[in-house]
Length: 179
Image (cartoon, rainbow, N blue to C red):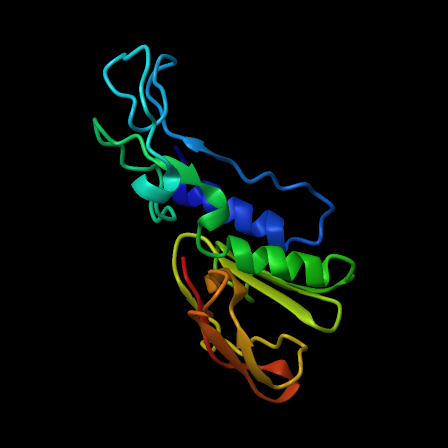
């Protein structure tokens, strides 16, 4: 029901250095305890539910709270939401890395709702809540080698939709974080 806020919390937990278990849920939306899966409408005692493959899944949330329509009861496939596949990959690659740097170093470093940290020498996380964040606006230094990096929160398992370009000292030259 909390849509975007819930999804952003998932992304933080997947990227965080904390040893937490993240459970991804697959199921369907419902309004009352008597509701069955999508395709079983109107209190039928027997029905043929539609599959997530044919009916589709709820899109990645973009608002909080979710807008609920009177008839919508979609399949919820959190494992397919944008960023989950990429951050699962990030988590497996960076899970044992020690937290090296947290930003903000003080209130002047970042705006409210922005958070960034580095794990080891090869992993960096930047998250934004409430508003998009252009990482090049302030001289943010990641500590990573110069180069082009995939924003794994935009990775859908096949395509990297956003990239971040780093210059000397790992300073962000181009790229941002979606809200």
